[in-house]
Image (cartoon, rainbow, N blue to C red):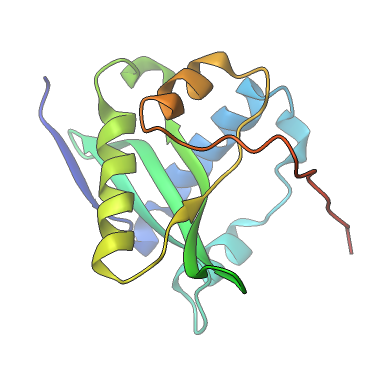
Length: 150
């Protein structure tokens, strides 16, 4: 394997993180759905009251993957992580980076006393579904996604 490094995301990484997010939006056939400003993204990760954290993987100081997550609370299970995005740029896929990022995020959750982690995957994203099955992830077909825009 090439020389990759995983570390916590830094404020100065946000430009590269947004590039990955836009790449994911194109892959998910929703390129115009990314509407968050860079200012809000930075503030929400590194401002006075940050709401997200991330691990990044880099090669030659270029970020090629990220795991972005935040804390959610379940009245049944207690503190849990919510994995918002696990992204590896297309040119770096197939090298085990997604596994390294997910493993690091799981390790973080365990070390910090969280009861588990949740996330979503599009029902047509077979490569991601097969990847998550390797973790014995529970796929719940009973719950519907609901959102409201303000």
